[in-house]
Image 1 (cartoon, rainbow, N blue to C red):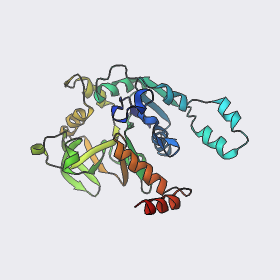
Image 2: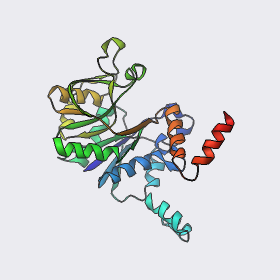
Image 3: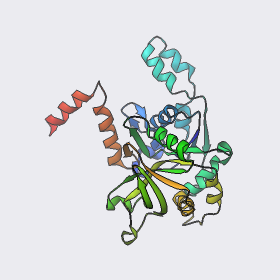
Image 4: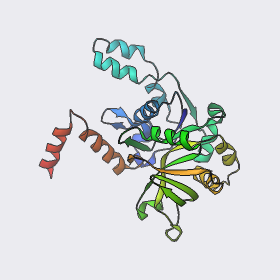
Length: 280
């Protein structure tokens, strides 16, 4: 399966860092978030990746390009050599979203790359850690069982649901919901479910025709509206994934990701716990 990664946002909430650098290059300790997302895709069995980038694209493209000078500099250190080499991803391509016309517009840039196949869509604002296997792999496995469009979901607070989307469903079987309707950024009185879509999806090629015909709202097409069209046709499943999602599109979500990753790191975990205890 191929993967498409949405990474074209302005990142204004992280100014001044994002004045010249994409927010997807924000590090989780020493690894850019975009690399962690690419590694999730590869570990899930993805063999080709398209990254939809914005104007601050240079650092992302350079990060995943082969750098022989860097490999020479660290060549004598086996550990550093392997770290540097891992950033070179041969089957990764980039396309710039020159007109920011929404997620529904951005996905159209992947039409030729995807072809007539199902694909994994990943949002670079969302960092996922699966408990037993990558979240994307869980969803690919579910698609192979059902053949339906899969939306990665979790129940969120009512305070957050108005910023995300509300997924209504007719039935539930374990972690799987049969979706009937999706409302993007619902008003409080419209909330009928706190189940929300969160950054990982398995889509089929019919998504492109649906997005082409979407109504434009404030100059943008919203891909969630396309999910709603497909849901009304009975072709959408919501999956309550087994794992943790970090919203690194906001500062506190980013800080919690750095903190949790550090707590799982053998080198930093004990030191960080002692430091926090002392600070408190």
